[in-house]
Amino acid sequence: MPHGHGAVAATRNPVAFAAMVMSELARSLRLRTRRLAKRALMVVERRVDAVRLARTMDHAPEQFRIATFGGHGNPSAVVVRGRALDNPEPSVAVEGEGMLAAIRRTVTRLSTIELPGVPLRISLAGTSVDTVTDHEGYFHVRIEPAGMPRDPWVSGLVGLATPYRGLADGYTAPFEVRVPGPGAEFGVISDIDDTILESGAQRLLAVVRRTFTGSALTRTPIAGAAELYRALTRADENPIFYVSSSPWNLHDFLVAFLDHRGFPAGPLLLRHLLGADVHRTHAVTKHVAIAEVLEMHPGLRFVLIGDSGQEDPEIYAEVIRRHPGRILAVYIREARLDPGDGRVEAIIDTWNDATPIVLAADSFAMAEHAASLGLITSADVASVSVALAALR
Image 1 (cartoon, rainbow, N blue to C red):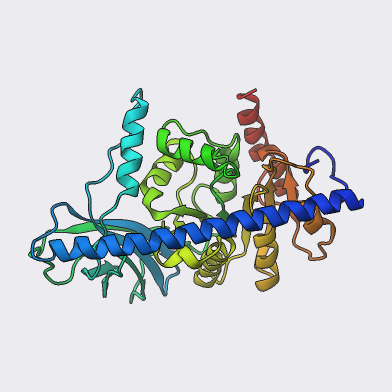
Image 2 (cartoon, rainbow, N blue to C red):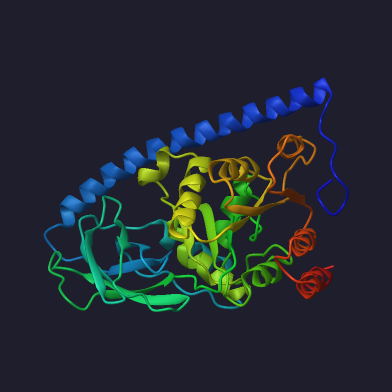
């Protein structure tokens, strides 16, 4: 059983071991099939995009906009991301709207018309950097401001550096970057699906249904997670980063969900729906994102939070090995379809690093252990308990 309800004994008998091996083989086959499908879709998408771009290059984009994804960093350097698109902004979810409105909004998010080769200027704290969007319309820059304000969130602006297909000045978009102050004691890196947001990521049809028919107002958070995260971040003193394999197309939805459900604000590090990231596995995508966070915040140690449904236990264990001394604790929420598959227990039972890896039944079990390490207070544990009790 997960932490808080007794430890699960390691799987020792041959039949159980064989079942675990078969489960891993089936999971590997599913992942390979998904990657092959994504590669095929990427080829088709690039050909369609090339034809569409050739037809529209002689006139201005009709609905040009710059979608900013924010950024993060330290007083010396920050990274900023975003995308140039020729699409209207998705509508904002409202209480009582029908399922059709949610479906239309999700289709709008996923049916992007990206704009490659757009010359952009990203300005922050008196320093500007020019860049050009890639073939998927994305930009990703590193800025080294001469003097960064000592604020936890610093505002910047993205705009056209030079005219683009008949467009000139007047097209700008604001963004914010997270720059932890000297009072930050540690940071938090969290997964999203089935860690803070009920997704059913192990069931493809369930994920699709929830993605298309839900909204930031109707999607269900994991009970007690918002209270736990607010306790860990200590009124925005400690930074939090949300790392996920969800596509950047869902960035605005996830930001709205976090805000609506009372989660602390933090940078999101997501992936391309297709494009360059298609060759990356789920694990590689997360490793790259986590490595960026650790590199940009060298003075902080981190708490990692994920779930047992996919590969978070294996990924986080490897992060500890690759970055010794940087991880304070790992919390894994039990989310497996088959909690007896032995996969997570195989990691925990052979773990000899001083960094604890805790398999937890719920947010309260995580909170209790975090309090034992001094990461949160007993009052924080009580608030998590109250949040869970309110749903029973």
